Picture 1 (cartoon, rainbow, N blue to C red):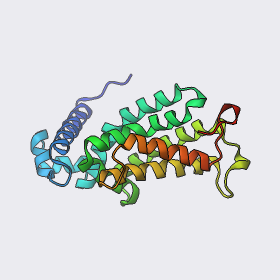
Picture 2: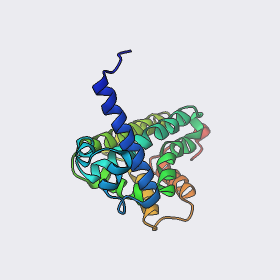
Picture 3: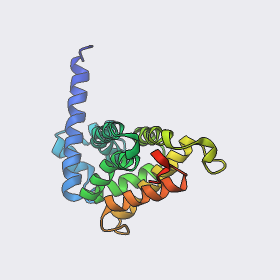
Picture 4: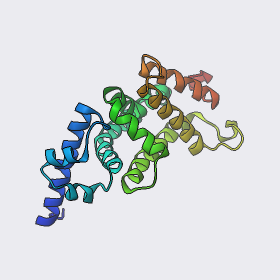
Length: 211
């Protein structure tokens, strides 16, 4: 394994401090109420240094939330892949559950994050976020594959697009919960949505049972 030089170590250490400070301040005060100056001061870096890592406050939000979500989503993906094929509803809930849980704990952070990922402008950290979400879509496609015959899908819909449709619907439901328009129990609502979506796709479990 290649050893980082002093300059690279210093850059990585500053980035870690920025991520840690922003995570803490966003969790305490919400994204909107936190300034980049507060983050820079808490991380003990100059304002200009912070903007070298994230050129805008939105990019800072994306960078920080990506870093927090990545290990949580990976753990959810591993849990999903460890389930039996018949547990496809629970497996898909494993995939989106970490996002829903963080949104429930920190709506003032995850709400703006989701809006930027879905509708924001191009930027390096938004690209990272889209890659994270694309990985979840691929996982959902893998989970659906044993249960969906391509010929049974609605016209014009292939398996990857079906998986994207499932994920888009579920992530929109998470966003609805963040803004107070969702069901009281987000996990139960997501599970119900998954069942409806899978039935719409013609998913059949062993013995022809419906999800």
